[in-house]
Length: 463
Image (cartoon, rainbow, N blue to C red):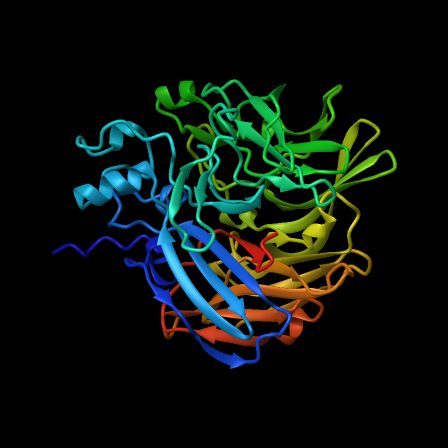
């Protein structure tokens, strides 16, 4: 008698999907939610509505949005799937039709052509009065910010040709949103399309820049004057896949590159960089002739080499580092030894010199724990990393900063915390200036919020 196959860890515990949509008017509050904290924390992540076709890749699971609205010390909760074309077709069929890993040929024979709107499961942005659900292979989907109902594709009036990043950057001074599209014409040529949407949502014509090779590019950054794209040697090759090799491979021998493009137009420059992997960038800014990029870097991405050999798992550990572009080269130095991911800042400092960053830590890639068990605040002036541990059986989501006063870092951190023992989650609020002290308040409601990916805060004022 054979043992049953082990359950995919990304379908278990804190990653397990929920199968219903609910509205809860009032959660049970422990402590006191700050009087000046008023708005909605939106979180998004993969949440398959049916058991997925194996093997499961969470990057392609159905997107679900969770909204916690805080007002007058009370907290309400709502969750909704993003109604993509895939979700609608599977909902009608009553089963999973689309493969989440591999090629479209792995889909159910009844699936039909893959809809162009993807899975909308990675990130959220508020821009030009719209709440947009994002993934990097498709255009955004607009959601109603109150009901979370899916309004449909948003292509900036038809000006977005194909897809866009899940990590656009909004300039805090102008309200303009910089974005890019990897593989903008559907061909693996190394092309990257750069765009900028003004505060009213009008999108520029695309500017095509050439990367060193076709690669996975998840995040990028802006300064006041330039766009910064970090291209790491996680390469894409259809030819390699056709020959029986991996579509995605880690090739450190190719080196990395930093592409710097003036936002107002002008000469694009490319600088060789250390062969490391960076999924998320904390911030970037200009300091005289230098461009400073702070990011969480890995010694190796967790993809096999072209020969199919996997890298050592310990090399996936992510640590905060600073890359400095100056004198025609990129120099890298580690800022701290803490293993960490999901860097966030006070977004009023996007593209500017800044002091503080917040991260998820104590677990994650490169460790023996899939979950992050704590939060941290890094002080770039002192080099201090202040850490709060949620405990060995509690997992935290990405920290999201909410401003309270005019000074940088004066505010709150909001996140969800998953309790493995109870199989439930809560909303937690921490003082952003004293993260190590732990939550000042929590809101509980006896349900699990899957760990997901990223979050967005929108004040009740609607900005």
